[in-house]
Image (cartoon, rainbow, N blue to C red):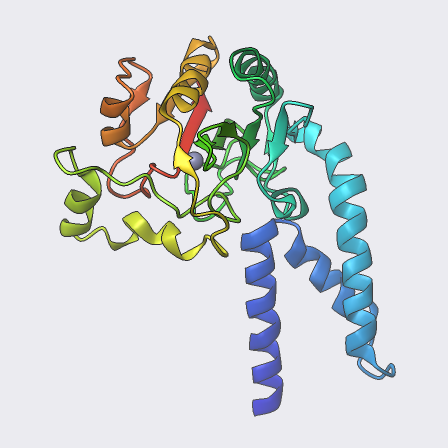
Length: 269
Ligand SMILES: [Zn+2]
């Protein structure tokens, strides 16, 4: 009896984690364990094999066909648009409304005109299905209208580069300098412990020689703001001041969110 309960709980934890992380993985896991009986030899291996096969087929073949029914499509990559990590696509965190794809294309072309060879690098967007199904840890990424974009950096020779300081694109911050307004300290002092939680999800830092490119990042932000479809943009207040940005669309995301000095968030109206 105890063994059965533990097994059930283990399955439950796996289903929840897969659903929270990938949206479709939990259902595919259930299908896999239902399809292969425990009496079968090496059933764990067979289940794992079936899960992997179904997951890959679903992610790269079926979900892209079904997502438009829910008003979403994959982010269209191009010469100028790239994912920070292929895991974003593998985990189905790369879906947006068609209007957002149009905006991304326009922004990336304009950015490339100003900074040749520099790509618009996206991080988490939305899952393919269902409004109000959040893409954790971003509570608001639940309707196809939201996307996170990497800041832009310069390499050790001072040249603007497509490299980013962390594997996921999150968690390496462009901290407030002394004298700059420190919203991070304020939020942490208020008890919003999750405000700098993203420091735990870098999955490794790559290049510590990179420095923040104020000019290229500002140009990127200005192009985002120029789009008629853009509703709001979030960036940490000290960077807004440092980049001398002044636009009604730039808002403060609030202490209940996470800090935005490692990425830019923007969303459709
Ligand atoms: Zn976001």
